[in-house]
Amino acid sequence: MHDSDSSQEKESGENRGSFTGKLGFVLAAAASAVGLGNLWRFPYLTSHYGGGAFLVVYVALAVTFGFTLLIAEVSLGRRTGKSCIDAFRDLSKKYSFIGWLLAIIPILIVPYYCVIGGWVLKYFVESATGNLETLATGGSGGDPYWWDYITGTATGSVLDPSIWFVIFAVMCIIIINLGVSRGIEKVSKILMPMLLVMLLIVTAFTFTLDGIGDGLAFYLVPKFEDLSYDTFLGAVSQIFYSMSLAMGIMITYGSYMKKDVNIEHSARNIGLIDTGVAFIAGLMIVPAAFCFGFQDSSGMGLMFNALPMVFHQMPMGEIVAPVFFLLVVFAALTSAMSLAETAVSIFKDRMHVSRPIAVGIVSAIILGLGLVCCLGFGPWMTNVPGDQGAGWLGIFDTLTNSILMPIAAILTCFFIGFVVKTALIEEEIEINGVFRSKKLFRVMIKYVCPLCLLAILISGMYGTFFA
Image (tube, rainbow, N blue to C red):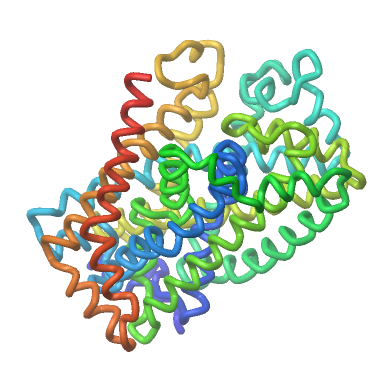
């Protein structure tokens, strides 16, 4: 296949890039889904909501709720051959605003996602150069290093995180500029298998810890008395975040999908890979953190605060730590690529410009908003209402994950279920054979998914504005 999304692309937006086949699409889409959501957020939520009970609920919802939204978005993209704005506009001009809402989300997420990627890159370099003890106990009063680092206390300046952010962002931009098949697909085919291998290696090391059996029991054995309304909300929101849904990403990737690729099979494979990686990441992190008393660290603490302390006390931790953080760099990079590519596709389609120009626009947004997030941890951002100590990064994260994404997903379900009807999606899927999950899809997209998403939206807005 020739790389049709080069600088010679026509301004009309035709000759879109495409994945070379099913494997390329599945690995690229799975690489998008497998990111910080799997390696940081899933283990933390599993610990927070009681271990095994949360795991059972998550898996059950992933194969129903997650699969439904995933297959809907991929089908919309391939049906129209467009990014999210034009995909909705082509099907109904009246509802094109849904596409605009989806377009805003990745543009807001990718800058702060690259900031977090820069932190992980910093931790990889520090642990690889023998500074694991600093990461574990180098903060104020012997506490972990992370918060002192991002606020500038550890180095005397908030500029160091900005440097690592720029390095990570440039890595992402270079890959995106290469295009769909030469950039995203090729990198995904290399990084995804490497990521899985490293996950298994680090997991094997954690099994050598004293007392790991108790941690494994906490993670694998469900205690259904721990089930609650919040458990289900947490599981649904994690699927949302983890599988790259309601961000326009899967619509964009679907638009690059060839007609001879089976959508249902591909979506099922993506879901299996994403859920499998989340499970292994939990197996790697949760039992180990349990052994050292970190099983319910809040927010990013489980990765940036607790894990360096775990590695510092672990046999051969100085080897395991850099391998782990390199793994997270890979995962963050593949997800950042998908977010950036979605934004690039939007600018290409709407402004009718070549890929290099669209990449330039997206690069400016990433660098501009990303630097705002980096510098937003200085003393001038303390006590900002609603940011929970996370500066502009926390503001962008709350806005996108708790408000915009649930609204966008509810509107997408309504659009497919009651405006263009489910037959539109079913016809696209049945190009390649029987749609085996048709009945489940209809019930989920019309009724179950919107109700779950509405619960998440109400909970998120209450937590943001009233709690």
